[in-house]
Amino acid sequence: MRAPCDDERVTTLCRVWWAAPVAPEAAPHLVALLDAHEHDRIGRFRRPADRARYLAAHALTRLVLADAVGRAPDALVFDRTCRCGQQHGKPVLPGGPAFSFTHAGDMIGLAVHDGGPVGLDVEQARTMSDLPGMARHIASPAELGAAPLTADAFFRTWTRKEALLKATGEGLSVPMSAITLDDDGVRDWAEGAPDGPVWLHDLHPAPGYPAAVAGLGASAPAVVEADGNAVVAARAT
Image 1 (cartoon, rainbow, N blue to C red):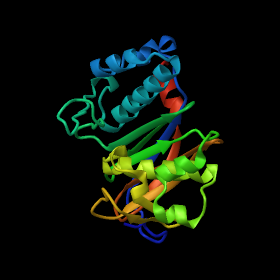
Image 2: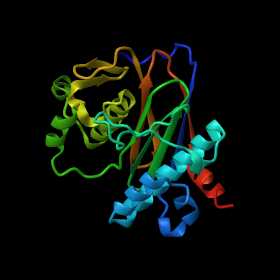
Image 3: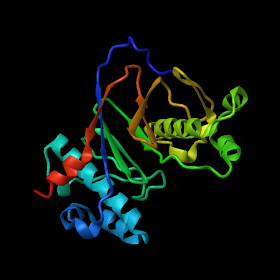
Image 4: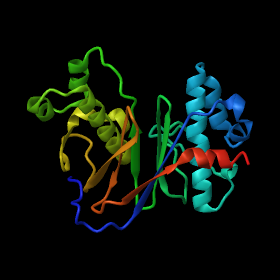
């Protein structure tokens, strides 16, 4: 389970859009795109910031995927079947490309990959009150034995591992400490590992926001970043 080498042939494309949160009160045209499930979820958030992040993430996802499959954004029907059989799992668009969205602070991200499963994560770098304790939560024994994690390294490691776990579909049901990373990508994966190789790519959407995108497969895709704010703004015109 290693990341592909630089000289391996790029065969697919992964696009990543970055956008800002959007308050529902200021964007009824975006709220109108949401389905019943999404309306219910956004209505449960008490903090305005959470509602704004949720709306931007889901509206951006609908707008980008609608363009990809040639359908209206409010007509897209997602399958959210969880392992338990209920509709609260990771959303999938039947017949559409793989996608993953994420948000932290004032940053919303969406990755769409035409070559297979994909995972995207962004974090807002901040002061940690117990950095050594948190490092034990995300770092493998091998990583902890190599050198103490700095705050920058902590958030970079977090985004890389969460992106990998999103790509496999395991999410945080598998501990981050089961994955050991090095400069080439994944060195070891002790629990919940995929059957084949993975790829991993660092992103830098804005100062203070480390991010990473990951996927399954032996060939690394070309990763292209784009302005998601322009996509969202175009809907209002």
